[in-house]
Length: 256
Image (cartoon, rainbow, N blue to C red; front, side, top):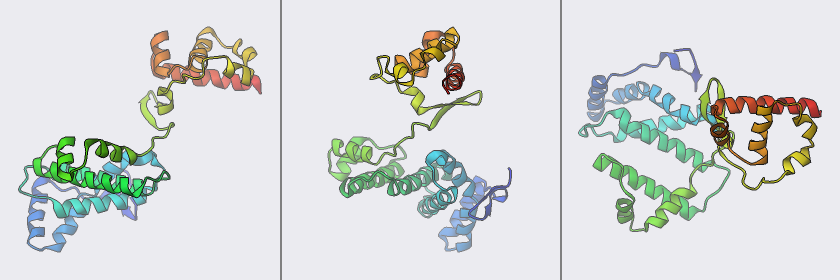
């Protein structure tokens, strides 16, 4: 593993604990050995690193995410029950993810009403408790019964704290060319020649080959997604992406 420092920690030298070693340390921690708890934390920091990679495209400093993830890790260590037939990593990852998501929600630019947030946090708390208690994901009905609120209120509260997704967030990579969220969204309003007329590229389009013109027409004149264009033409979505970028680059040269 290459040397990467996060919060002053050389991640290439982080220890990795085996399952038997962790169980032994948990027993020692329960008996009051504070050193055992510190070893459990340091021995699971790689778990935090693997989790924060999921949030690399959120524009947050990796050091901040790492610190928040460590809080989730420590909560998982303090609340882990050796009596449950569950691996620690299986129990800890959702808690680390939850801690990071709470941090991102609290620092999100879109503000949600306090009442909805309170309900959402209660739902998440009860969901974690029921999941730990029953060793499975609870149903909406179980959460609704526990909190004595309707299913609709639960769904509304959880929807209100969902993090916005950037249109430029990559969702797939093929041959090094990322496919973004915006490539999966069609434009149903753009059904006339407005795009061509406004940018005045009719002459430039004539200089493109037949396939390039077809792709730009389908994408920007008919508002189709790259996947829809790929299905219609009979090539891969990655190929559509590459041809589209190339054609747009040529257009820019011709109209400058």
